[in-house]
Length: 251
Image 1 (cartoon, rainbow, N blue to C red):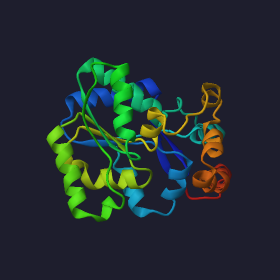
Image 2: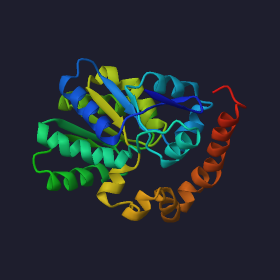
Image 3: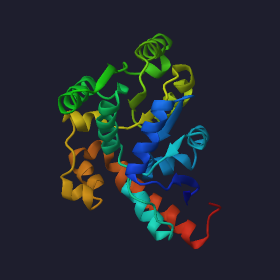
């Protein structure tokens, strides 16, 4: 079951269902697959980026990271089952991986973020098998030697789940270009989650998370980096949803 939000097909699963689907596949994993976690920014990028659309069309799961997608689905009278926040998904999958003996690899983030996130989770879940962390050099996507090194590290580590924190749409494009060669059962793009878990970037208080205000907190904490995404992007997203509601678009 999927919900169409401005032409993007979002899977209608609860957080718990998504975790189970990913873990079950990571254990069986007959062929490599990947998961995307859209928010309003993704939706806007998808309106014009043909390659990004292709990546979404071939994803194993498309799960709603942004609370704006829940609001949009409700407004369109096609409600989703709940938010699948990327950072929460990262933590829960690591928790379950520890209990199931699954291996994980952390790629991306700011220098030191993936290593610190791994330390945090290994302290929390002592049985967690983190088989590798790596922070690519700036501009790695244009560096053949760095790309080959990244792939070699992941292939040698042979994780069941690969977490990629490179920001959108870079992380999704990198995953799509490499996931078949890497042969990791499940790859998941999780944005800034390494920084949030490691404490490099402060996460919103729980009450703001529960009330869908995490975006506002992030805007306050990092205004220079995020003002365009939220101040400009959110109204544009709302306009697309309104057009869909009124039948003024082809979605």
